[in-house]
Length: 365
Image (cartoon, rainbow, N blue to C red; front, side, top):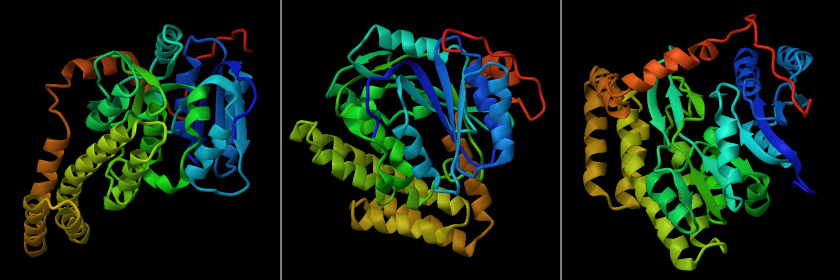
Protein backbone atom coordinates (compact mmCIF):
# COMPACT_ATOMS: atom_id res chain seq x y z
CA UNK A 1 0.00 0.00 0.00
CA UNK A 2 1.05 3.60 -0.68
CA UNK A 3 2.15 5.30 2.57
CA UNK A 4 3.65 8.58 3.74
CA UNK A 5 3.18 12.13 2.55
CA UNK A 6 3.05 12.42 -1.23
CA UNK A 7 5.94 14.13 -2.99
CA UNK A 8 5.28 17.05 -5.36
CA UNK A 9 4.74 16.32 -9.03
CA UNK A 10 3.23 13.60 -11.19
CA UNK A 11 4.33 10.03 -11.93
CA UNK A 12 3.50 8.49 -15.29
CA UNK A 13 3.42 4.74 -14.70
CA UNK A 14 4.19 2.58 -17.75
CA UNK A 15 3.96 -1.19 -17.27
CA UNK A 16 5.59 -2.94 -20.23
CA UNK A 17 6.34 -6.35 -21.68
CA UNK A 18 8.87 -6.77 -24.51
CA UNK A 19 7.78 -3.83 -26.66
CA UNK A 20 10.79 -1.50 -26.55
CA UNK A 21 9.86 0.32 -29.77
CA UNK A 22 6.39 1.14 -28.47
CA UNK A 23 7.81 2.03 -25.07
CA UNK A 24 10.14 4.52 -26.75
CA UNK A 25 7.14 6.37 -28.14
CA UNK A 26 5.27 6.28 -24.82
CA UNK A 27 8.22 7.74 -22.90
CA UNK A 28 8.86 10.34 -25.61
CA UNK A 29 5.26 11.51 -25.27
CA UNK A 30 5.91 12.20 -21.59
CA UNK A 31 9.21 14.01 -22.12
CA UNK A 32 7.57 16.58 -24.42
CA UNK A 33 5.13 17.59 -21.69
CA UNK A 34 5.91 20.94 -20.10
CA UNK A 35 4.67 20.17 -16.61
CA UNK A 36 7.59 20.24 -14.14
CA UNK A 37 8.43 17.44 -11.71
CA UNK A 38 7.31 14.66 -14.02
CA UNK A 39 8.68 11.17 -13.39
CA UNK A 40 8.36 8.22 -15.78
CA UNK A 41 8.22 4.91 -13.88
CA UNK A 42 8.68 1.88 -16.14
CA UNK A 43 7.84 -1.58 -14.79
CA UNK A 44 9.26 -4.30 -17.03
CA UNK A 45 7.47 -7.63 -16.82
CA UNK A 46 10.25 -9.49 -18.61
CA UNK A 47 13.61 -8.02 -17.61
CA UNK A 48 14.26 -7.33 -21.29
CA UNK A 49 17.69 -5.75 -22.09
CA UNK A 50 16.25 -3.83 -25.06
CA UNK A 51 13.58 -2.34 -22.81
CA UNK A 52 16.14 -1.29 -20.22
CA UNK A 53 18.27 0.27 -22.97
CA UNK A 54 15.37 2.53 -23.97
CA UNK A 55 14.97 3.82 -20.42
CA UNK A 56 18.73 4.32 -20.09
CA UNK A 57 18.76 6.36 -23.29
CA UNK A 58 16.08 8.73 -22.03
CA UNK A 59 17.71 9.04 -18.61
CA UNK A 60 21.03 9.90 -20.26
CA UNK A 61 19.23 12.67 -22.15
CA UNK A 62 18.01 14.26 -18.92
CA UNK A 63 14.57 12.72 -18.48
CA UNK A 64 13.48 11.58 -15.04
CA UNK A 65 13.04 7.84 -15.66
CA UNK A 66 12.88 5.07 -13.07
CA UNK A 67 13.17 1.46 -14.25
CA UNK A 68 12.24 -1.73 -12.45
CA UNK A 69 12.49 -5.23 -13.93
CA UNK A 70 10.72 -8.24 -12.46
CA UNK A 71 12.67 -11.46 -12.31
CA UNK A 72 9.85 -13.26 -14.09
CA UNK A 73 6.60 -12.48 -15.88
CA UNK A 74 4.17 -11.92 -13.01
CA UNK A 75 1.21 -11.16 -15.31
CA UNK A 76 -0.24 -7.92 -16.64
CA UNK A 77 -2.58 -7.02 -13.77
CA UNK A 78 -0.07 -7.89 -11.02
CA UNK A 79 2.46 -5.66 -12.78
CA UNK A 80 -0.02 -2.75 -12.73
CA UNK A 81 -0.77 -3.43 -9.06
CA UNK A 82 2.93 -3.51 -8.22
CA UNK A 83 3.43 -0.19 -10.01
CA UNK A 84 0.52 1.56 -8.30
CA UNK A 85 1.68 0.36 -4.89
CA UNK A 86 4.88 2.34 -5.42
CA UNK A 87 3.50 5.73 -6.41
CA UNK A 88 5.00 8.40 -4.17
CA UNK A 89 3.92 11.57 -5.99
CA UNK A 90 0.79 13.58 -5.36
CA UNK A 91 -0.56 12.83 -8.86
CA UNK A 92 -0.25 9.94 -11.28
CA UNK A 93 -1.16 8.79 -14.77
CA UNK A 94 -1.40 5.17 -15.95
CA UNK A 95 -0.06 4.72 -19.49
CA UNK A 96 0.23 1.46 -21.43
CA UNK A 97 3.42 0.95 -23.41
CA UNK A 98 1.63 0.96 -26.78
CA UNK A 99 -0.30 4.17 -26.07
CA UNK A 100 0.96 7.74 -25.73
CA UNK A 101 0.09 11.11 -24.26
CA UNK A 102 -0.74 14.08 -26.44
CA UNK A 103 1.30 17.28 -26.04
CA UNK A 104 0.03 19.51 -23.26
CA UNK A 105 -2.19 16.88 -21.67
CA UNK A 106 -0.45 16.91 -18.29
CA UNK A 107 -0.51 20.70 -18.08
CA UNK A 108 -4.22 20.82 -18.88
CA UNK A 109 -5.07 18.10 -16.41
CA UNK A 110 -3.01 19.58 -13.61
CA UNK A 111 -4.44 23.06 -14.21
CA UNK A 112 -7.96 21.66 -13.95
CA UNK A 113 -7.17 19.83 -10.70
CA UNK A 114 -5.54 22.93 -9.23
CA UNK A 115 -8.86 24.74 -9.52
CA UNK A 116 -10.78 21.93 -7.81
CA UNK A 117 -8.79 20.55 -4.87
CA UNK A 118 -11.67 18.23 -3.93
CA UNK A 119 -11.66 16.40 -7.30
CA UNK A 120 -10.03 12.96 -7.20
CA UNK A 121 -9.25 12.88 -10.92
CA UNK A 122 -9.67 14.71 -14.19
CA UNK A 123 -10.67 12.75 -17.29
CA UNK A 124 -10.14 13.70 -20.93
CA UNK A 125 -11.19 12.14 -24.24
CA UNK A 126 -8.90 9.55 -25.85
CA UNK A 127 -8.31 9.02 -29.57
CA UNK A 128 -8.58 5.40 -30.76
CA UNK A 129 -6.10 5.05 -33.63
CA UNK A 130 -5.37 2.00 -35.80
CA UNK A 131 -1.84 0.88 -36.82
CA UNK A 132 -2.05 2.94 -40.01
CA UNK A 133 -2.80 6.16 -38.16
CA UNK A 134 -6.52 6.33 -38.88
CA UNK A 135 -8.49 7.90 -36.05
CA UNK A 136 -11.35 5.46 -35.50
CA UNK A 137 -13.18 7.09 -32.63
CA UNK A 138 -12.98 9.64 -29.83
CA UNK A 139 -13.75 7.88 -26.55
CA UNK A 140 -14.91 9.63 -23.38
CA UNK A 141 -16.48 12.82 -24.68
CA UNK A 142 -18.43 14.31 -21.78
CA UNK A 143 -19.73 17.82 -21.16
CA UNK A 144 -16.84 19.50 -19.32
CA UNK A 145 -17.00 20.45 -15.68
CA UNK A 146 -17.14 19.16 -12.13
CA UNK A 147 -19.17 16.01 -11.41
CA UNK A 148 -19.97 15.83 -7.73
CA UNK A 149 -20.75 12.63 -5.87
CA UNK A 150 -23.12 10.86 -6.45
CA UNK A 151 -24.00 12.51 -9.77
CA UNK A 152 -20.62 11.54 -11.21
CA UNK A 153 -20.93 7.80 -10.66
CA UNK A 154 -24.55 7.81 -11.84
CA UNK A 155 -23.47 9.51 -15.07
CA UNK A 156 -20.57 7.08 -15.44
CA UNK A 157 -22.89 4.09 -15.13
CA UNK A 158 -25.03 5.50 -17.94
CA UNK A 159 -22.30 6.86 -20.24
CA UNK A 160 -19.50 4.39 -19.62
CA UNK A 161 -16.24 4.66 -17.71
CA UNK A 162 -13.26 6.69 -18.87
CA UNK A 163 -10.09 5.29 -20.39
CA UNK A 164 -7.50 5.75 -17.69
CA UNK A 165 -4.70 6.67 -20.10
CA UNK A 166 -6.55 9.97 -20.52
CA UNK A 167 -7.00 10.47 -16.78
CA UNK A 168 -4.84 12.23 -14.20
CA UNK A 169 -5.44 10.98 -10.65
CA UNK A 170 -4.61 12.35 -7.26
CA UNK A 171 -2.82 9.79 -5.13
CA UNK A 172 -5.65 10.32 -2.65
CA UNK A 173 -7.90 8.44 -5.09
CA UNK A 174 -5.70 5.38 -4.70
CA UNK A 175 -5.63 5.76 -0.93
CA UNK A 176 -9.43 6.01 -0.71
CA UNK A 177 -10.37 3.31 -3.23
CA UNK A 178 -7.46 0.93 -2.87
CA UNK A 179 -5.41 -0.71 -5.59
CA UNK A 180 -6.71 -2.72 -8.53
CA UNK A 181 -8.81 -5.78 -7.73
CA UNK A 182 -7.02 -8.85 -9.19
CA UNK A 183 -10.36 -10.66 -9.54
CA UNK A 184 -11.66 -7.96 -11.91
CA UNK A 185 -9.42 -9.23 -14.69
CA UNK A 186 -9.79 -7.38 -17.99
CA UNK A 187 -12.19 -4.83 -16.47
CA UNK A 188 -9.92 -3.89 -13.55
CA UNK A 189 -9.65 -0.36 -14.96
CA UNK A 190 -13.44 0.02 -14.97
CA UNK A 191 -13.69 -1.41 -11.47
CA UNK A 192 -11.05 1.01 -10.19
CA UNK A 193 -12.66 4.07 -11.80
CA UNK A 194 -16.07 3.23 -10.36
CA UNK A 195 -14.61 2.70 -6.89
CA UNK A 196 -12.90 6.08 -7.08
CA UNK A 197 -16.05 7.80 -8.37
CA UNK A 198 -17.97 6.26 -5.47
CA UNK A 199 -15.71 8.14 -3.08
CA UNK A 200 -15.58 11.66 -4.41
CA UNK A 201 -15.90 14.23 -7.16
CA UNK A 202 -14.17 14.27 -10.53
CA UNK A 203 -13.61 16.63 -13.45
CA UNK A 204 -13.85 16.31 -17.21
CA UNK A 205 -12.28 18.47 -19.91
CA UNK A 206 -12.89 18.48 -23.66
CA UNK A 207 -9.35 18.42 -25.08
CA UNK A 208 -8.08 14.88 -25.89
CA UNK A 209 -5.23 13.73 -23.66
CA UNK A 210 -3.95 10.48 -25.14
CA UNK A 211 -3.93 8.02 -28.03
CA UNK A 212 -5.01 4.41 -27.55
CA UNK A 213 -3.35 2.11 -30.07
CA UNK A 214 -6.11 -0.08 -31.51
CA UNK A 215 -4.77 -3.38 -32.86
CA UNK A 216 -7.08 -5.67 -34.86
CA UNK A 217 -5.83 -8.83 -33.14
CA UNK A 218 -5.68 -7.44 -29.61
CA UNK A 219 -8.07 -8.82 -27.01
CA UNK A 220 -8.60 -5.30 -25.68
CA UNK A 221 -9.58 -4.12 -29.16
CA UNK A 222 -11.86 -7.08 -29.95
CA UNK A 223 -13.05 -8.24 -26.53
CA UNK A 224 -14.86 -11.52 -26.18
CA UNK A 225 -17.43 -12.71 -23.72
CA UNK A 226 -14.84 -13.93 -21.19
CA UNK A 227 -13.63 -10.36 -20.73
CA UNK A 228 -17.10 -9.14 -19.79
CA UNK A 229 -18.67 -12.10 -18.05
CA UNK A 230 -18.75 -12.60 -15.14
CA UNK A 231 -16.29 -9.76 -14.31
CA UNK A 232 -18.64 -6.94 -15.33
CA UNK A 233 -21.45 -8.40 -13.20
CA UNK A 234 -19.05 -8.67 -10.26
CA UNK A 235 -18.26 -4.95 -10.57
CA UNK A 236 -22.00 -4.22 -10.50
CA UNK A 237 -22.50 -6.46 -7.47
CA UNK A 238 -19.68 -4.71 -5.57
CA UNK A 239 -21.17 -1.29 -6.26
CA UNK A 240 -24.56 -2.40 -4.94
CA UNK A 241 -23.02 -2.98 -1.51
CA UNK A 242 -20.27 -0.33 -1.55
CA UNK A 243 -20.36 1.41 1.84
CA UNK A 244 -19.17 4.66 0.22
CA UNK A 245 -22.50 5.00 -1.59
CA UNK A 246 -26.04 5.54 -0.39
CA UNK A 247 -27.61 2.06 -0.70
CA UNK A 248 -30.21 3.30 -3.17
CA UNK A 249 -27.53 4.88 -5.35
CA UNK A 250 -25.39 1.75 -5.22
CA UNK A 251 -28.28 -0.46 -6.32
CA UNK A 252 -29.25 1.96 -9.08
CA UNK A 253 -25.69 2.15 -10.41
CA UNK A 254 -25.26 -1.63 -10.28
CA UNK A 255 -28.54 -2.18 -12.10
CA UNK A 256 -27.60 0.36 -14.78
CA UNK A 257 -24.28 -1.41 -15.33
CA UNK A 258 -26.02 -4.74 -15.80
CA UNK A 259 -28.43 -3.22 -18.31
CA UNK A 260 -25.47 -1.98 -20.29
CA UNK A 261 -23.85 -5.41 -19.97
CA UNK A 262 -26.91 -7.02 -21.53
CA UNK A 263 -26.63 -4.66 -24.48
CA UNK A 264 -22.96 -5.46 -24.85
CA UNK A 265 -23.64 -9.20 -24.78
CA UNK A 266 -25.81 -8.84 -27.86
CA UNK A 267 -23.05 -6.94 -29.67
CA UNK A 268 -20.42 -9.43 -28.52
CA UNK A 269 -22.53 -12.25 -29.93
CA UNK A 270 -22.93 -10.55 -33.30
CA UNK A 271 -19.24 -9.59 -33.49
CA UNK A 272 -18.38 -13.20 -32.64
CA UNK A 273 -20.50 -14.34 -35.58
CA UNK A 274 -18.58 -11.97 -37.86
CA UNK A 275 -15.37 -13.78 -36.83
CA UNK A 276 -16.89 -17.25 -37.18
CA UNK A 277 -16.91 -17.82 -33.40
CA UNK A 278 -20.38 -19.28 -33.26
CA UNK A 279 -19.79 -21.03 -29.92
CA UNK A 280 -19.06 -17.70 -28.26
CA UNK A 281 -22.11 -16.21 -29.96
CA UNK A 282 -24.33 -18.95 -28.53
CA UNK A 283 -22.91 -18.36 -25.05
CA UNK A 284 -23.85 -14.69 -25.36
CA UNK A 285 -27.34 -15.62 -26.50
CA UNK A 286 -27.78 -18.06 -23.61
CA UNK A 287 -26.89 -15.35 -21.09
CA UNK A 288 -29.19 -12.85 -22.76
CA UNK A 289 -32.10 -15.26 -22.59
CA UNK A 290 -31.41 -17.01 -19.29
CA UNK A 291 -30.21 -14.22 -17.03
CA UNK A 292 -31.49 -11.02 -18.60
CA UNK A 293 -34.66 -12.28 -20.30
CA UNK A 294 -33.74 -10.37 -23.46
CA UNK A 295 -35.43 -12.88 -25.74
CA UNK A 296 -35.49 -10.81 -28.99
CA UNK A 297 -31.74 -10.06 -28.80
CA UNK A 298 -30.97 -13.67 -27.89
CA UNK A 299 -33.05 -14.93 -30.81
CA UNK A 300 -31.24 -12.58 -33.19
CA UNK A 301 -27.81 -13.79 -32.06
CA UNK A 302 -28.88 -17.45 -32.22
CA UNK A 303 -30.30 -16.98 -35.72
CA UNK A 304 -27.20 -15.23 -37.04
CA UNK A 305 -24.95 -17.89 -35.48
CA UNK A 306 -27.03 -20.60 -37.17
CA UNK A 307 -26.78 -18.83 -40.53
CA UNK A 308 -23.01 -18.43 -40.25
CA UNK A 309 -22.68 -22.13 -39.39
CA UNK A 310 -24.44 -23.15 -42.60
CA UNK A 311 -23.27 -20.25 -44.78
CA UNK A 312 -19.67 -19.54 -43.69
CA UNK A 313 -19.07 -16.78 -46.30
CA UNK A 314 -21.76 -14.76 -44.53
CA UNK A 315 -19.25 -13.89 -41.81
CA UNK A 316 -17.31 -11.68 -44.25
CA UNK A 317 -20.40 -9.58 -44.92
CA UNK A 318 -21.07 -9.44 -41.18
CA UNK A 319 -17.49 -8.31 -40.58
CA UNK A 320 -17.96 -5.37 -42.95
CA UNK A 321 -21.25 -4.46 -41.32
CA UNK A 322 -19.70 -4.75 -37.86
CA UNK A 323 -16.87 -2.41 -38.81
CA UNK A 324 -19.30 0.12 -40.25
CA UNK A 325 -21.44 -0.04 -37.11
CA UNK A 326 -18.53 0.19 -34.69
CA UNK A 327 -16.60 3.11 -36.14
CA UNK A 328 -17.86 6.52 -37.30
CA UNK A 329 -17.34 7.24 -40.99
CA UNK A 330 -14.21 8.99 -42.23
CA UNK A 331 -16.25 12.04 -43.09
CA UNK A 332 -17.38 12.48 -39.49
CA UNK A 333 -13.79 12.11 -38.26
CA UNK A 334 -12.24 14.38 -40.90
CA UNK A 335 -11.49 17.37 -38.67
CA UNK A 336 -9.98 15.21 -35.93
CA UNK A 337 -7.99 13.21 -38.49
CA UNK A 338 -6.56 16.37 -40.02
CA UNK A 339 -5.45 17.59 -36.62
CA UNK A 340 -3.94 14.21 -35.80
CA UNK A 341 -2.00 14.17 -39.08
CA UNK A 342 -0.80 17.73 -38.62
CA UNK A 343 0.14 17.69 -34.94
CA UNK A 344 0.62 14.13 -33.71
CA UNK A 345 1.65 11.85 -36.57
CA UNK A 346 5.38 12.40 -36.08
CA UNK A 347 5.09 11.11 -32.53
CA UNK A 348 2.75 8.31 -33.62
CA UNK A 349 5.30 7.05 -36.15
CA UNK A 350 8.29 7.20 -33.81
CA UNK A 351 10.26 3.99 -34.18
CA UNK A 352 13.47 2.40 -32.94
CA UNK A 353 16.60 4.26 -33.93
CA UNK A 354 14.90 7.54 -34.71
CA UNK A 355 16.05 10.61 -32.79
CA UNK A 356 14.14 11.61 -29.70
CA UNK A 357 13.78 15.29 -28.86
CA UNK A 358 15.99 16.08 -25.89
CA UNK A 359 13.73 16.49 -22.86
CA UNK A 360 13.71 19.81 -21.06
CA UNK A 361 15.32 19.74 -17.64
CA UNK A 362 13.33 21.21 -14.80
CA UNK A 363 13.42 21.54 -11.03
CA UNK A 364 12.94 17.78 -10.62
CA UNK A 365 16.09 17.02 -12.60
